[in-house]
Every structure is written in structure tokens, then in C-alpha cells.
Amino acid sequence: MHPVVAALEGTLIVSCQAYPGEPMRDPNTMARIAAAVEHGGASAVRAQGLDDIRHVKNALTTIPVIGIWKDGTDGVFITPTLQHCEAVINAGADILAVDGTRRPRPDGLTFAETVRRIRDITDIPVMADCDDETSALIAAEAGADIIGTTLAGYTGAREKTPGPDLDLLAALVEKLPGTAVVAEGRVHTTQHAAACRGAGAFAVVVGTAITHPTSITRWFHDAVTTTSPNGASA
Image (cartoon, rainbow, N blue to C red):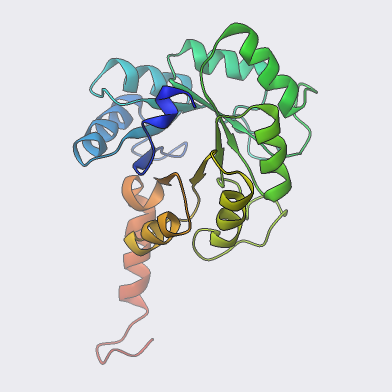
């Protein structure tokens, strides 16, 4: 196991991202959020976009950066091509995260071919953002260093669960012994995070519940505005 990956075992990874058009969509802001979660105990951060990766790496943090580049909104858009992968690596990412599903990639390469070409230029660990058991097993066979449940429930391959997909997580832990199987996706409470570790997750990624105030505010707003003073739902 790559030493950068091995150091993440039993830890919290935080995804520091903001969506286009939001007030926090600024690389300097994301770098400060990354520094803040490092102070809170995060072992690594996921950063989206080349500017964010550079700012997080060069500004305030000392922990590893898992770099992604989202390009588009449909199909494969998380670091979708080899060119995107190379750009993320050159931006300074310590770990490269890539869509690990079986869907066709824009450049025509398979996930396995993408990993092989990455290995030709660097030994940087690769994280596969997977959506079901089959894609995860294929990604592991292709040499991915980390298998994430990131896309479970978002591609149609599996039903979207209210919280993390613990069934998928447990199945992958069983079928991929010795592999860094990381829980990611809809980990919205500390109970969710603990359940992921209980199911065998190598590490747990939390994003929205820590670093996205718009969503967190909406959760509380909905709770307040749909409950009457006597405690009943409005």
C-alpha cells in the first residue's frame, strides 16, 4: 500500500468544495476551509479544480490533497479524461481521484487504460470514485489504490440511500481485503460516520455536512419552518 494511503487508515477526510455561482466559490476561501478542517483533525482534503488544488497545497495546509477536476454535469465528469488527470497531477495533488464507473469516458479510454497511462508518468495514488460493486472490483483489478463509494446512488447503478450506502460498503470490504475501501457520499451525521467505520471503512470522507453552509442552513431551515410550536410537523 502506498505510504500516503496507508497514513489515512482510521481517519476522517474532508471534501472542501463549493458549487459554481455560490459565495464561497473562491480558491482562497476553499484553502482557508481546508486549513480549518486540518485544525479539526482531518487527515486529508478533497479539493475540486486546478486553482483550488494549487491554493490548498500552497497556502495553509500540510495534509495530503486528493485532487479532482469536475468538468460538465452529466455522465463521466469527475476528472473525466487522461488530460484532466495530468492537469490535476501537475497542479500538485497528492492523490488523484477519478470517476471509476463503467460509463464511457469522453476520451474513449477505459478506466484501466487511464490508470496504466497515469502509471507511466507518476506513482501518485489513484482513488476510484465508484457507483456499485462491479465498478469497484474492476477498478481494484485495474490498480486503483483507493476504492470510494462516492458515486453510489448517483448514476442509476444503485438506488440512492438516505445516508451512506452501508450495504455496498460492507460488500466491498468483504470482497477487497487489504484494499483501502473509503466511505463517501451522504455521510451527514456523526452517527453515519461511525456506522461507516463500523462497516469496515478504511477511512471516511465527509463533505457537505462540514463544508457546505448552504446545504446545512437548508437542513435547519426546513426543520424550523416545517415544525409548529407544539412540536408537530406543520
